Length: 245
Length: 245
DNA sequence: TGCCGATGTGTACGACGTATTCCTGTGATT
DNA sequence: AATCACAGGAATACGTCGTACACATCGGCA
Image (tube, rainbow over all chains, first blue to last red; front, side, top):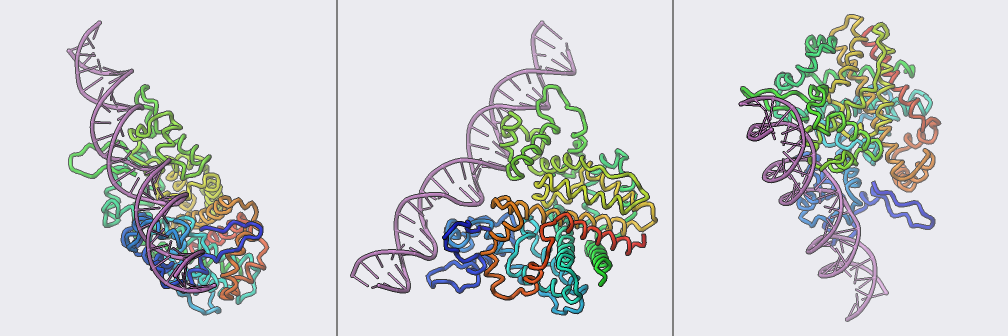
């Protein structure tokens, strides 16, 4: 995201988010941040994150490739706008009494959001972006933990632990799904079969006996949702235990 | 990673990993998978992951841009090689009796590894790669949980929960560090000050009172290691509790 | 009415991944 | 010792990308 250089006496120009909320400044403008963000998200959802190029975006907006640069400093700004836009769909319960329920909902919704917009996993920096919509979610999460009087550091760390787990999980899930789809495999079994020749060498070395045993015995190999909630509940259990709440 | 199409009667060519371990096939060859991987890692460490282009790699190897394609199917293969190479540094204890110690060491070492090679966070698909070195690590992790007789699914899910948390955390950390460095900020305070004009608008809206309160009260804001171990211990606590070990 | 800043256009550059074709030296075969 | 198939590297080329820069145009205000 473009950040105005911090020089003496420089007039701070309104931030991306401030401009996002201002009404389209002049009727003349056919391009607005909202239109740009919407078009970019649409492209990403329909054709994948890699398809979001400034040129593709421009044609979708019916405009020349350079036009968007009047509103957005570059691709970084664009990604930030996109992340913020889809993050608006997150709606956390406002029940400050039930920290576990709120955090659980936060995790489940975030996972769904990322699976619905797999391109959110493409930008590792997206994790760190503090956009308005993401801050609103964080606010709810913190509020839920705020009821029990805990030190600020623990509260922050707890929320971040959940966030880290969710992002890591969703990214894995998306990466595996993309990998399957790119190769046209439609089921877990088909994938394993196709991968077998590749794995045969590694497994054949006999270096990974335990791995092999578990890979053969596991019965919920393809149940990502179960795996996710299992891990999530571990994290939540741990938080509750460690914070004594 | 290139995968041979699964057609009838086709001779399966040796996998990337099989070729990696074979000695350089002919003395003629000046390029080997080992040399390629080493050069690519060196570039990534010194100049950042984005600097790893087939052309930059070629000049480093003293060779034309297309030469590497004789050994590697493309950039995907190259990334896989790079990830595998740095992952060899992971050395987990072989103490199958102490599952928590092993998983904790796994997590801490992985974090260090990613921080030392920040480009590992660039490729979300890297999370899913099953390279020899990464499988060796997984083997140790599974072995540690193997002692207590648990069902295969829980063991897998527990290991993946730790992995997800670690990757999510490390990515956040790396993203924040990169963001700071890109802007030349050297301390947390300097970063917050520089970001202040941007944040002022969002905070100024008064929509995030709890966030604001916690941001002001927290005293370990810049202690990433503490935050990491806090979250990690939550995850481990939860696993122990949920699996009854 | 005439100017000025905001908005979109046109053109251009350098870098990227990689398909394709060609060349050259090497080890195996006779 | 002469030949030859072929593997490894070189050369060239194509299409695409992000974006710098200079220009044109239009609306609102003096």
